[in-house]
Length: 178
Length: 215
Image (cartoon, one colour):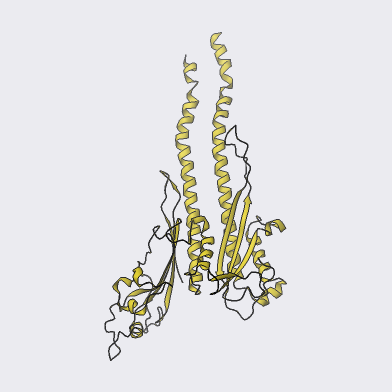
């Protein structure tokens, strides 16, 4: 009888052991997935802004006219198309900024932001494309302690790329920047 | 008795498995983060090198701030000696007869005379942005005493100062017989970037990342 009782009691042990093992491993897996997701998002945005800069510094007025867009719009389009859907829609586009910087000996830093000027995209100026503070949502809520509120805050990632606008006699319209 | 003694076996197995899996996971994380840092370093060097080759003056704070934005996650700072990354920009040129002539180091027949760096690659510009203690250039380091505030090095130092010789491989000077190589008087733009790697001993020693691009 005593042996049978022991047998009956051990039937749920596997479930209990599985639960105990599952919790820490699931937590570790969650950390790994969350970190990977953030790094992937950062790398994707970095690729997107870099692609947009490479294309943006060579866009001509003829190309912009054919596309029916301004330079800034075309650059932002490229960022969106290269971001694997992360920056889709108006809300996604709002994270993209295109700054134009001119060399200016009268400025204390030697450089002036001319993004709002009509000739801000003159050849020789620097085009800086950025995605600022894009929120990468947590895949799973983070529980650090039973005594702390659950953390669901997104990780903020940013990406920058810059290059000098190539010489051209066919400069496109700058559009609304940044 | 036997059944009672086996009941804790799973915990021991779990503990043994954890000893393997946890370090494995930490190793994967550190390796992945270092690869990500390396990719960012390559892009920083590439962006800096291309703008440098397009005559952007990186001695100006405003242009350095553009680089600092690109290298922000690497810890690039515009303040010399601070931060966890560095960008080293160099111009190198080959000292041929025309370079010696430019410095007046030729004899009456136009042959090099006193042009001690003749036949060597030398630095004509050196600009360092960020924390120079992170890494020194693979090409060498010209003495700070001969580098002017705008990063340039006088032609006389280029052709006579032995400490201005750069260690350059893989580029050939102009060869008039085969019409190949770098044309006389032209410079090569070299950008190097380095950043402190992810540090989590014993899984990641924090080895610095490094990238070098030529334009």
